[in-house]
Image (cartoon, rainbow, N blue to C red):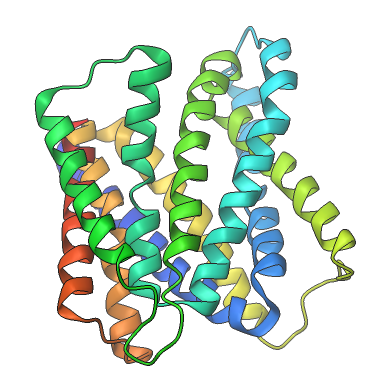
Length: 289
């Protein structure tokens, strides 16, 4: 029963992230990637703000917190998350959704490689082979920078988002050990919001409340994104990683299906194979790791 509950939460995470990313794409085409990133990162503040009082009431606050690490790495994490969000939403706004989400999903592989290099974590032969499959898929996607309709595929934005999120994974590791997962989530959200606010000001864009038009899409997208994270965390407490992680990692499939149905996206054979190799590799790596 425990594994079944974990699988259910993993599926909830899969659909939450998949649908949330598609809705974020819709909103980014209306107001731009920078504003979309700011609004959704702002909404991501709510889960930790709601959980903090509960933890305090139950006496489960992380203790002791290493504030030296938090103050040192917190701003870096916020900057990396802001860059990842802007790159991702810019790719969704201007490129081919299927390619952007497939390439970005390989952040898991980047995190594994960085952990191997910088933290000395073990990397099995099987994991190395799977990373090779993911790299092959990405290389196949990199060869075609324009879609069948002649517009940019957004590959480079997906690649940038992939590297930034992979780096954020390493920072999550350090900060999680120093302050706990909820504080790390809060610090990352606050840091990214500050960076994005400064970016908006420098760009001459006003930080105002979203207009009524499309605000429902924004709110649903933001809460689905936050809900996906929460569902995965709950799932990991109910079942082993190899049950929950592959389900959560498969969320690009939902986004791609929605793009196929509603945006009528069509990929070339090379792009289709590249997407399948990348996404299946990410799922396999998450199950293996």
